Length: 316
Picture (cartoon, rainbow, N blue to C red):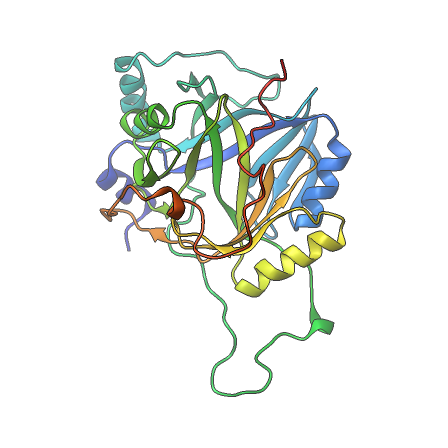
């Protein structure tokens, strides 16, 4: 079996993971309640909250105190041998280098994306999946006992961060930057409205997605669960916790995953995601440009009117 480093040499210099995301909110207690209700392991640390998944040592995200909800930075994981090549590529494309954007920002090579989002290139172990996530289905071989018992329900606990969807003023420019400079590859798109990119080192159908908006921002974080029941039970547990607004259950076209989006107190979302397409290292994915009607879902409830609203756009 090939190691991650062997896959890295085959794929070429490229980001392998979204190592961590960070955003600010005005109320850390509200954030702690939301994400703990969602099923994450929420820890108070380093001036804010750390977001972990059950039984996983990796910290996927940070929520810090701020005047408003705002995407602060992304830390992108890379292999050690790729740092020099990626740095040279950044210089050749005139990418702006920046200082640490926040007192709690990590060490690494800091650059600025074309839309102004702060990015940290950090040498780190790969945390994006290297194989397709497990899928749990009803037992076969009988007609009795295939559904779980309501009396046995436990809290849905996501396994890992699947992807992020970012707002950006120019989807084409974002795709060019993340692919041409950072080595990611286009998975699929719908014109200049939305696009999805994956890692050539192996990742879910999208490591990052981009949706058109007047300003940058974070639309949603997506978290893997291993069954369709978990998506439905997650929706139920969040409604019982007071978070009834969102979208789903449904199924996406691009990525193929089943979903339930739950609206957080600041108008963005956390997604329960099951059975997303996986693109293995070395696979040449047949990227396509889909019609707008295929860019969001195959089936599900009507899209909320403000679903693609960027609440991080400054109010003038």
